[in-house]
Image (cartoon, rainbow, N blue to C red):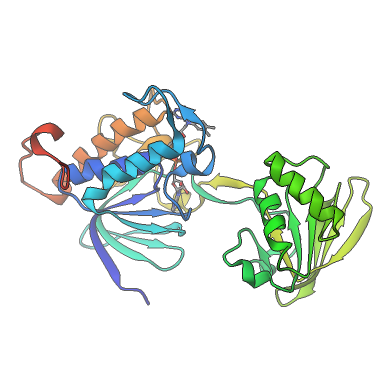
Length: 339
Ligand code: FAD
C-alpha cells in the first residue's frame, strides 16, 4: 500500500484556477499538492482549446490558452507544488485530527489541513461507446489512448472515431499493425486535412481499411480479449471485423463523478460556496473556479483567479492558527526564485 503524503492544501483539479491557487497559497506560505484526472495540467484550456486565443485575461490583450497555462505553471513553480496527474480524486475523509485524507483512483493518499476543489465541470475522461459488456475489455483490448505504439505491433486493430486522434493513430499504427480498420459514421473526417490526405493514400495502398459509414455495434471475445468488433450501418446492416484491439477516440467529457458523494451542498452540479471566502458547507473544504457557485457567479477564468486568492486567505488561519497575517503585496514580499 502507498505511504501517506502530507501537505497543507490539496487542490483537486489542475485547470487554470487550480494552478493559480498554488501561487496564492504559496504567497501565504502554504504548500500544495495538485491532483488531476488528465495526464497534463491546464484543464479545459489544455484539453479543449489549447490554440484558441483568450482576450479577457487582464494585461494580456490576447493569449493562447496553452500559453496561459504555461505561464500559470511557471508562476506556481517557485512554490514547488507536487502534481499527481492521470488520477482522479475519489475519496475525501475527515480524520479525527480534523485534517483531511484525500485518496485517488491509483491509491495516492494525501493528508492535508484543507482541500480546495477546483474541478471545473468534473474530471475529464474518455467518452465511452455504449456497447454491451464493454467494461470486461477495457484496459485489456479496448483502449481510449495509446501508451506504447509497439503494443499494437502485428495486431489487427480497429480504430473508431472521426477526429485528429483517430486519424493520427491510424497513420501511426499502419506501420506496425497487421491490419488497421478505421470505423466512422460518415465519410467526412474532422481532422487536419493534410493528415486525412495521408490516410486516404494509405487506404489506396491497402494499408488501412476504411469502414464508413458504420458505427460500433458490439464486441466479440472472451476474458477481456477481443476476437472481433461488430459494426453496423444506420439501416442496421451488420458485419464483424476480426480484431485483437479496439481503439475508441470519441473525445473527452467532464463528469462530476465522486465529487457528488462528498457531502457538499450542490446546486445543479455546482458546489455552493459562501461569499466572500469560498467555503463550502464542509469545514476545511473550499471550492473555486467553474465548479463553485454563488449569487452573481461568472464562469470566467479571471473570476476563478480572484476566488483562488479568497480561498487561500480563508485557509491560512487553519494552517497557521492564531498567527496574525500582516497582509503584504507580492511586490513587497517577493516570490521565491524571482529576480
Ligand atoms: P477546468 O479548466 O475545468 O479544470 C478542472 C480540472 O479538474 C480538469 O482538468 C479535471 O480533469 C479536473 N478534475 C475534476 N474532478 C476531478 C477529480 N475528482 N479528480 C481529479 N481531477 C479532477 N473563459 C474565459 O475566461 N475566457 C475565455 O475566452 C474562455 N473561452 C473558452 C472557450 C471554450 C471553447 C471553453 C470550453 C471554455 C472557455 N472559457 C473561457 C471557460 C474557461 O475555460 C473555464 O472558466 C476555466 O477552464 C475554468 O477553470 P477551472 O480551473 O475552474 O476548471
